[in-house]
Length: 193
Image 1 (cartoon, helix red, strand yellow):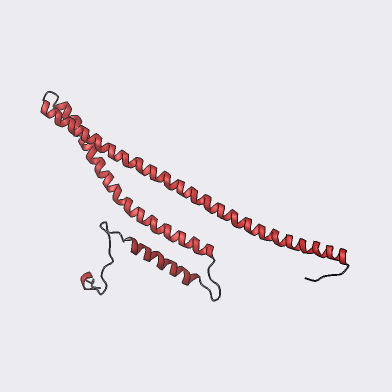
Image 2 (cartoon, rainbow, N blue to C red):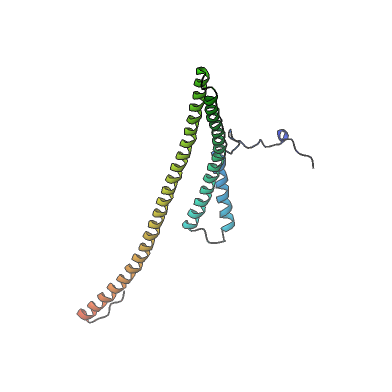
């Protein structure tokens, strides 16, 4: 089967950013299409979805889209970190051996020391990235923990609302019975409600 020339196709190729990843609008369109697919597959003749199903499905799809965006961004960061780490290692090595070999020559010694300092500086940058990544992971865990607490609180509030409605019905029935007893006792007749 002959391969089509992408320039001769009817549809233009989808837009991508500098790293070849789809833009945010395209990711959002994908999430909307997944929601639409979920609606069509799960819909029955007379019933719709509960709000909880909608929330769970939307939360899952949005989280997946955000995770994909973060992963595509992190892939590029790994390459950059490795490159900087390699350069830093090379500069420190050159600086160290240069300082040992050129100990009696002042101009070479200065160059070796500058290379060593530059290498240590790059190591510091790579280390700072590691610290920043750890801080981001910590804040993400705190955010997730807070979200779980909010969901737990929401669940407990809903449970309390259900319990209060049941208790309200029981109290109304009890009040109605007490009222009928009082009327019967005071007036001797039965009143229907």
